[in-house]
Amino acid sequence: MKWLLILPALYVAAFALLVALQDRLIYPLDPSPVTPAKAGEPRLAEKSLQTPDGETLIVWTARAAGRKPTLLYFHGNAGNLANRAQRFDRLLDRGYGVVALAYRASSGSTGSPSEQALTADAVLLRRSLTQLLGQPPKGKILYYGESLGSAVATSLASQIPPDGLLLEAPFTSLTELTAEKLPYFPTRHFLRSKWNTESRIKSLKSPLLILHGTKDEVIPYVFGQKIYQAATSQNKHLETLKGSGHANLWNTQGQTAIYRFINGL
Image (cartoon, rainbow, N blue to C red; front, side):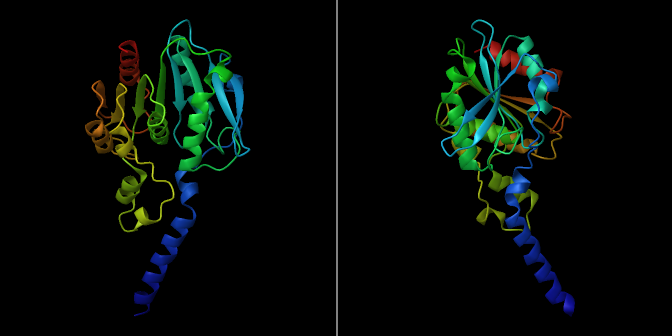
């Protein structure tokens, strides 16, 4: 009969550990500082932003060619900016401007990540474009968010609407996602970061592109469908990548959809 006492104790201990370590699990970022040149993209310059609460944020920047659009890029919670160098290379090849934020505790940025902090940092980034680029962008300003970055981009868009919003593998809310992944724990009552993208997307009118793979085991495809259905933009598109998972959406079909969307703005 001892197991009747042991199992509840193990459950409580596991849940307590989950609550205590939630920020590390949500934001398993790579703090390693890597310059754009070392990452293989010397066309990007590394800049820094000082936050009101005294932290330093690393930002990779490159101006757009002529009146081409500038993309504010918000990466996922895995790796760092260096892992996205190939993406930036393709975007720069097309003449797009790139302004990529390294979250707190990622790629040499200081501080600790949270929903409130990352949203405030994204707003600061948007308001600092002229400072970061040395001149105001001449073309359209788009937000591109992948995975966790889709929530950051949407949160920013709810405060400062973009000319276009690109979301790669978005989720409705962290509350709903963790409830699906950890159904036996009451996580919704203890999450500090909620990231309710579904609620925020309802008020946005900016043109919207969603990319999602049907074989995504990290953020299931149904979450992308829900975001698309909740969006009220008159110009919205869900690009379904059949057979693609979470980490391989940057493929020929995905890139073609992105370029088509941008060219149509």
